[in-house]
Figure 1 (cartoon, rainbow, N blue to C red):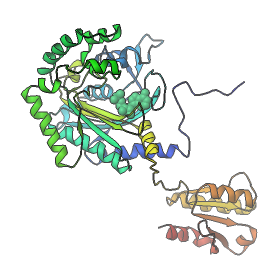
Figure 2 (cartoon, rainbow, N blue to C red):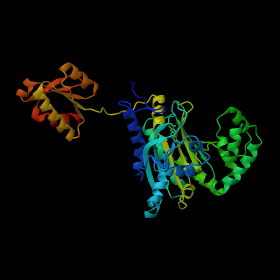
Figure 3 (cartoon, protein in one colour):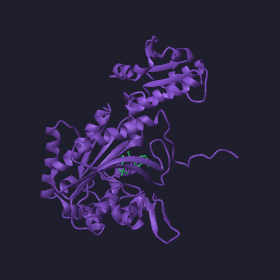
Length: 420
Ligand code: AMP
């Protein structure tokens, strides 16, 4: 029988590369933890209706990309294609918005699923770290989230990313614009699919990447000019806050994003080294989503950054993260008695928090030293019967190659001292 393979559009994270993924998740989470965001975890699947209503019946995500299924018990579920609807659902269900001061600030990290055509940077299973600030309308909150994402990317050493920023208007000015835009789009020469989109979700047409569509869009009514006074002032305040904090961005009137729930502020982080799948993260304000899924009015804002694409962006920029070696000390016993003694030393080191590993499987000295080398350990402890008879072990500095005898009773403290 041949070996099974991972399903199409998925891949496995394996050592040593998996360490980079963990570090990226951690780097994105760190600024959030440091800014009042609490960790939230929701199930990998939800009622399919939550996404249909939340993300939008007319979006590609819901119509084409969702893994929806019926359980044996007859429940209609879907693997989560994104995080915001689930997090808001969880917050509403637990009445977090009634328990303290708003906004409720939450962050999350997990797997998401979309039945997309796989290509580099676009998978059917991918990872995001996200943040949501629920229940407050304040331009400083929008700015905070953008600044924290910028900080996360910078802390990883990324430089070739850009922030695209737009405002999509609110329930006052957006419908007026929508109609104006529809009228314009109906006069264009568009294929059937796009015509249908004009009727259901005309703003998405602005986002069409095809040159023949883009060409026709010159002269389309401007969303920016249709913003009501309140939206305009809000947007201006977000921009000023970002500028004051030294975060540069590009105004992009055409940025509409693929989800229906966005209002006012929307933004995307794009990386120039990634080819067609250039969005590494995105988000925005979703003031109407809570009501769309049966909750009270809770103006909110959030983002999700893609872990997979962030790792690709690091590769594209040639950034290598400075990750500590997973193992600091590697023990190589020679003989049965040494095996017992060094096993004890390794256990003691681990209990003290020193990353230590052991040559299992009764290898000879040469083979075991090879494993020690490959582990990246800074020190190797080698001991045979003669050493133990003298109450010592050999401590080898793997960088300089120097080896010196150390009393067995002192080896743990000696290593701790040398590593600190
Ligand atoms: P979205 O909710 O579509 O804006 O996604 C937010 C971020 O998640 C994107 O900027 C990507 O980094 C990542 N992402 C979305 N879909 C995929 C996918 N199919 N494969 C890999 N990453 C994805």
